[in-house]
Length: 550
Image (cartoon, rainbow, N blue to C red):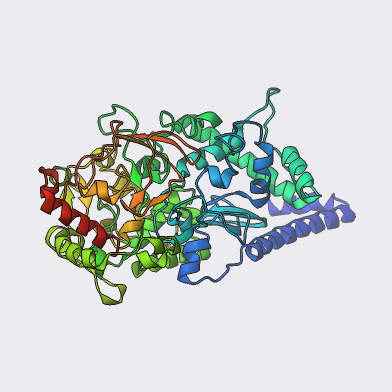
């Protein structure tokens, strides 16, 4: 239409309508501008130091509105259900999923609250709950029911079942009642909140929750096309359905799903990826102590890249990770691990009744220096770490431990794929890393790093297949099956009390003959595995005493 004819058209429109159209357009633009300004105001960052960023800073892993978390236990509270898969009488969802209770918040350690929406990172008038670094990298040590427990931030969790928790949220989003209606809805949430706090959802909460539910169900439909539907509530802790169990993840299955949109599978396609990884302690992560590489398989060099990719597998995206607050928190949390010093045996009040035998410790130090220091290094005055052979990479042939962690499909494609996500972002990405910072080692094996805070690193080996240090070093036979959950700490054998039958605290059966669960390998000291005599056994006892203190 020419400018002349367009002008003629306007002349045919009454002045009042022309004015109304201009006013409506102006108002719409003003509303859009106001919403954009409001989103930025809602999303205004909360400055945090490095330690706080690690404990409770947003890293882009927002899961659901806070009001949904408040209502979930009330909606799924009939018998065995998504937020009490062990059934009534076994504690709430914090207890059942092995999370750590806080005295100052209804949320457990490591769950944070932000005003950012999932995936996009856009601002929200309603707070969302996300998973901070500390949800995985925190431990509560208890030696008995009467022990109130001591919490250590930085230790890998020995009790949280993160994958089951994730599937429980997935299941809750799509669960329907016998009439085919979604059990999780604005109506059910409002009903539970009204009973709990005296008022249901506000208008703003209703709008945000409804938008979140719509997006979450759409995302879950896409997930199901790629990775299948979530398991039933009664299958969440069954190793036939979610085989990782407490304290472990399947990191490359998650990465393959998120980055390549492929089902995580083993290299020979004989079955799903079984590359289970214990969630590690993150002490002494500075390359000066740790060597160039990290992860159990030595696949990541840059600590920020490690944290970025970990957050992405837990719900982060390159889009929300580009937000200033999320990027800065990710960098700060990674910085926090560089010089993080582990606690000492004497820092645990419950262990006062089990003091270190000083004479044995000194004898054990000599055994350690002869048998372990070459690879792992040792502590030094002031809590620093003296590297042994930092960056030493032991092939599976060398170490003999379970090989599944290095047998996932597409391992050769992942480094380039994850690099491209950030390097080719539409604008310079604050968390972009160099191509050489992520690799697929040519020969499958495992990385040898510092082991400060050894007593807090149970269960042992990269796949968590050995409950105690006594079993790891050959003082006692390694069990072929045991149960996991909220295991008590064993101050004598140093590790987890791992019963051979399920009990009130431990429900997940760990069988070492299952794929990815082998407890073979790392037979050091070598002489401990060759019919040790009395003198050898005495040296092992001394070594165990020393391992308590490093």
